[in-house]
Image 1 (tube, rainbow, N blue to C red):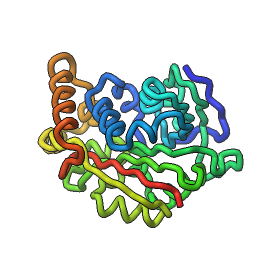
Image 2: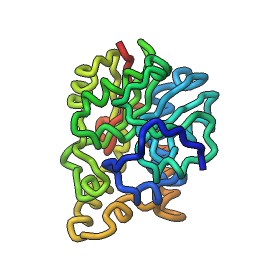
Image 3: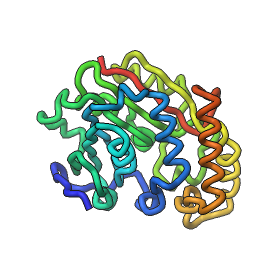
Length: 252
């Protein structure tokens, strides 16, 4: 368990604790997101930097980046249950409400990571503005969100999603937050049928929705989706559609 620096008292957040029990680095979706991230943002932008992950949860992204790059990632979250699960990290872990805007963090980091976070926030533009407080001018703002409201299902509600995004919507939110040189891309094109099936399947369920909607398939099935991931990433640098949307830009 990582040592946690408590700058803020833990709070209840819009994210089901159950997700942190079932989401691991072995899960094909977690690996897919990271492999696309590396190709989309680029090695030079990710190596030898100091990043801050807002809404770091139980540290999946932190562990992935620090394992592969000469980079330190500090993490902040308010979910004490998730934070206590972080292990093997090099950076500092904070229980921290970013709206506190601690002066020690002002313009501190080379970039901020917001992976599957802003869809949980009512005022996502204000949240982006507040996150950028922690980044140097010109620093990277890296975002991943679920795509397309038509894919919104009971799973989204169970894990605390307020919305899903299109390119136009996310770009408008980022521009309103003072982020420039924005690049966006969908990913997970091959997963669209799977999410449509999940949406229909969960219509008939009232319990265990978060776990049934995301639980890691074992053996052959997980390997199959990893193979699909490698094929899609190799063939499509920027898929025309997908189940997720990734973006990055620079703080003005």
